[in-house]
Image (cartoon, rainbow, N blue to C red; front, side, top):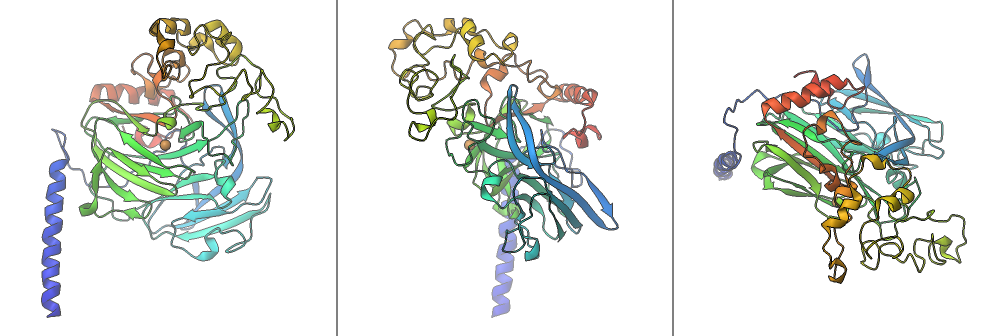
Length: 484
Ligand SMILES: [Cu+2]
């Protein structure tokens, strides 16, 4: 009886999975000149971040992970003081193979204790990184050595297990390549960290207690400063989104239907993959998507929360939009530390009342030609002396883009100054990966927005040649450049 039931279950199970496989492959359009290379593991590319190198000690892969304060340039003219690893926040990606024995020597160069949690690892509790529970916190100047026998596969992470340290950049990716490569073969494999910071005007440190985020980053950079994903038309592409932040991010891709093929728990069996063009990446989760890049063009990949598609998104903005000296520091709690009372120069003062995003006025009427219009070039020069205005778009010209009766229309302005030529900085973010994008593209690319550039062979070869020629140190794309 039980044998018969088992037999039926097996039979049904097999036919169900055959059916699912057939169904799925009919949904995925294979490129015309489809070839089916044997699946093999390829290095994962973490754009704008790169990998942590290792040395061998016998059969052990040894990584040296250093927690330290870092200066992270997130956009031309905007550098944040963060805590990260080995010079960047997020820290570099660690890549190992299933079956590897791995040692991570962790040095704490921070001014306070820390410990590293290995998110999703099924390993000995003494290496789990729970401070004071599974290990003593690592004091400033201290060291702790973690050892792992890698028996899992997929997208994992490492991060400080001190919550606020995590929120100031102390996280990184940990890729475990499978012993048997995932099917079908992917030609490109990317990792993208999703992060958000709340940075007050004129400050360089994130306010880790705030949940009003105004800087939204992909791999440590805001659009348009982040680097697009470069793929050849017909490539099968995998993107692994990792979210170690405070907010959730519905990541949307244009022009293609993808399948969700992995979570932070590893590979999803093919019969259970689900199609979509948006995948919600919740906090502490990873979502891996795969698609055949069969539609040529520069397609956006972005978080679809509108506030996450902007830079300096804040209702109490400072220097970015106003000709003031910025927020005064050192005032008392009674006066709201300078934020609530007073007049000029106080972000929430009467004449500079909360405005941006609330339609109540943009600076004072003395600052702007129209109540809510963009600053004139001259005013912008005064307000933002650090920016290279010669490379910005025609701000004065923007006035002509606005209807004469704009100020009589409720809701104006919405995007009239948040996006547009004024924000364009094509030259400031120029790099080989951006070669050939439409002029002015960067004025409309902010926050958690980037491209997957699906390039026909000639354009792909052209961009790759320029990337090679750039000969950059620790190029995150090195693994692709060396095999093309
Ligand atoms: Cu988001």
